[in-house]
Length: 198
Image (cartoon, rainbow, N blue to C red; front, top):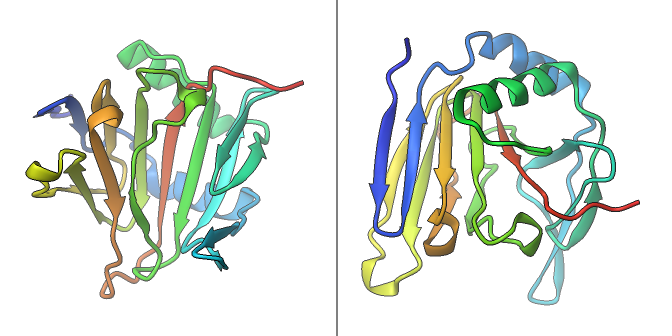
């Protein structure tokens, strides 16, 4: 039985469950070697920059997702992630049809503040985030500029962070650089895309 922590936010709720994935090291190595990792470019202030991490996108046939200024079509589910998706459905009752994966090669790779609130995710998105590899700080800050003190959660390998509605509407999250972190990390974010192509 795993300890589960519910974190109440002013305009949101999180569930943090350590040790959710028991074979985390094996799964990390599988994903690291088997997925088609890419490094898209971002347009910022008139200049193009490579994203400070590698990404992969998997899901059901016909699922596509617009992020980093590009339309990404889902690659087929690896068996290991399809099984993990089924486990999340059994444990929490949410359906997911895709997973966006971020590969942080070291502490220089990062993710800036943002919300997972794209139109394709609907008005009340649920995001299930699973961490593999090196532990990293996960920061949250309210979109209310008068309540900007960030909250920090240390995401350990094998852990699950479930972000429940309406968290994405009122909060942003980030994974900042950590210069002393040299252990790579893979983050899986399971989502339900409401529109498909093809």
